[in-house]
Figure 1 (tube, rainbow, N blue to C red):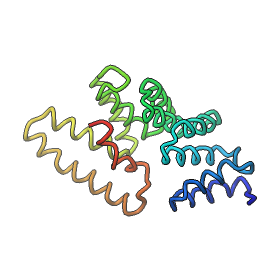
Figure 2 (spheres, rainbow, N blue to C red):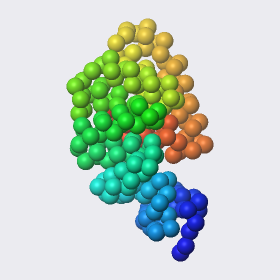
Figure 3 (cartoon, rainbow, N blue to C red):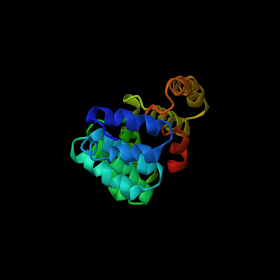
Figure 4 (cartoon, helix red, strand yellow):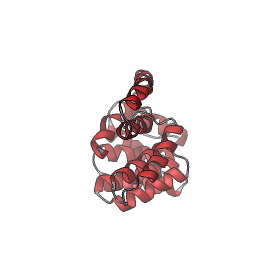
Length: 194
């Protein structure tokens, strides 16, 4: 099947959303589509979803070399899954430097828990604040939790409306688009860091 580059991502993305990871990969690595950084990133996420982290890393690196910011984050995710936490924090930090909001949370979480870096509370809070400012709801939730741990009952009562607001915004986003990157890590964010 022949595709024009502009069609590549949309056709592959449809297959990806429909759960046809192999079909998305097939389109994205075809000769016609292999030059599109969007397709390379999508192929990488499809490989990542299949737990083929080395293949994911390969395609993330190609897309990142072409200037795709999200692919730096993807490299971090693949490194994290492979247990290379030093490379993960470097890649997440690079994505954060380039302004990718989701990466701020992961850098903050790694500092909060001392994964691949020394545990540094102040640095963790700094990156979580940047993630929260970028609209990343999990960072907002973590900051509320950090405040609750460090405060008494009055702090918890004060934060309860903020916590409900984060949950409500997350629910509204999930109804509109469950794959929205502001909430996409909700099922696994707590497993990875807590």
